[in-house]
Amino acid sequence: MRITIVGSGIAGLAAAVSLHAAGFDDVTLFEADPGIRPHGLGLNVLPNAVREIAELGLLDEVRRRAVPTRELAMYNPYGDLVWREDRGTSAGYAWPQLSVSRSHLVLALAAEVRRRLGEGAVVTDARLVGLDHGSAGVCGVFADHRGALRRVESDVLLGADGIRSAVRAALYPDEGPPPTNGVIMYRGTAWGDAFLTGRSMAVLGDDRRRLVLYPIDRDEATGRSLINWVAAFPPDVADSTDGTDGGKAVLAQFGAWSPPGVDLARLLEDTPDIRKYPMIDRDPLPRWTFGSVTLLGDAAHAMYPAGSNGATQAVVDARVLARHLATHPDAGEALRAYEEERRPQMTELQRSNRSMGPERVLTLAHRRAPQGFEDVRDVFGEDELADISRSYAVTGKFDRDWVNTRPSLSVGERRRPAARRDTWSEQ
Image (cartoon, rainbow, N blue to C red; front, top):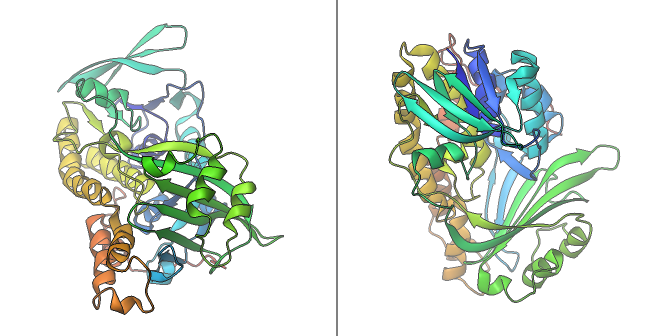
């Protein structure tokens, strides 16, 4: 089977590795950029996707420059702890949750693609400009920066080219650009002192603003951490500054906000490159698969950055898709089975993230106690916070019991593995 993948981000690279592991060796990725650009800042990979990375044999490489997340702690603007929960192996998962630089994850996946499929498996400077698809096969037309065209015939074409997907645009030509909720995000990374447990993700917020911080790397010699931070606030707040100085804009809104052990002003000052983005997603689609073409990752279900599900679900998409292609005799049937398994779940998750997923507890806390509180039990009913977190985990299929006990997605290994605690150090 000849398989073409459009896009060399996390979804496309994970799909290529997963397909090779499932027995396919005629797989080629086409990337519009002149090379694989490991851009991006920090991200979280939840245990359900870390399990897939481990089954592909990449966990050692990925965790080499990652931080195993120990806890999630959420605070109101006054520093009152609204909710705290263990994460990863500390919460009883058999696999860790990893906070990692996107560039490190992309480079690890790209190196594995080339090792498995050869240097020619990744074609850069190849932008999709045409798509002709049907049940018997598909033809993609790619253009380089000079305008030279290349026609590529394949049995299956996978659109893994992100939130502004050319494949999705070919399937839905009237859709238009990604919608925004108007929220502006500033992002950056900087080296700083470890805070809380040293492996904590801290989220601070009210009903309109969010500040997220977590370490994605650690210098063992100095004990310092590379801290990824994200600040988000709506346009009327963002417009209170001229926007030319990202650090000043963030400090103007969050100067008094920080988890214990963080000097926010110093962290912003030490951030060499502060980037500004609109918060965007995609509306859920009624259909991903058209004949021999389907979508995965952000091309299929881009969602707001809440709950650590962007990269996580892209990896799971890749593994589920590879399994269906390997276990169905007909490619079209396999793509439809993949969509039937993944699309309803991702549609629900996209909608949940539009209310900020588990972070909505901060909105509730602010609305119920806008001046803060002495005891969170005066604000939330018994088990209410735990139920919100648990419900979101079930929606995303990363609840502990499911992750630890479900059958493997590896072809030929459809067995129920014994739950085990990872043996590598989390210190």
